[in-house]
Amino acid sequence: MSSPEVLVRLREVRKSYRRGAQVVPVLTGIGFDIAAGEFLALMGPSGSGKSTLLNLIAGIDRPDSGELVVAGEDIAALDEAALADWRARNIGFIFQFYNLMPVLNSRENVELPLLLTGLSGRERRQRAEFALAMVGLADRMDHTPNELSGGQQQRVAIARALVTDPTLIVADEPTGDLDRESAGDVLKLLQRLNREAGKTIVMVTHDQRAAEAAHAIMHLEKGELFVREELKQG
Image (tube, rainbow, N blue to C red; front, side, top):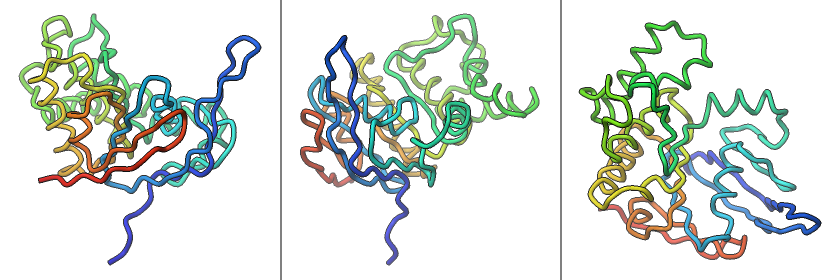
């Protein structure tokens, strides 16, 4: 049996930030692989570097040193214009607080990433409607965010992340602002997208219950990988 394709490869990745004259190390030589089709949860205490690691994988930030290859591209070597184009083609973002435009309806919010493409207005609309149907919101396309529950808003955000058919979905505390029932619905949706659509997902969470929806949990401690815990999905 062949080994699964490696979608994300990190080797000796380091990242620090400046706080005045002080240099604060955040990641101190991280190295691991993420296979295509994996659902990985990143956990750790505040300040452990998990959100920084997610931002590096998504091409939002750059490492100080080390190798970072995502979807076959050495993203640390790209200039800003090339990196923005790479993100648009490869990354779908899901945030804790949804980041929806309040004056736009669900379909218009989902269409936003497609405005950077060469698709026609009709094609954008069709793709947005298909993405909303995938997350169970075909009947909420004309509703603005203030007409939706928190769980529904997060599903709109997931549809927006899906609409470009990204290689990788990155989720930063996607259930952190939801009640238990809505959080469970979002996690089931992410599992279904991973299982049925083959989407690779990397999720940062503080919630052990949320993390257990993944295939594996990567624990970080003080900028270093502490342990990887494999999970069995029934």
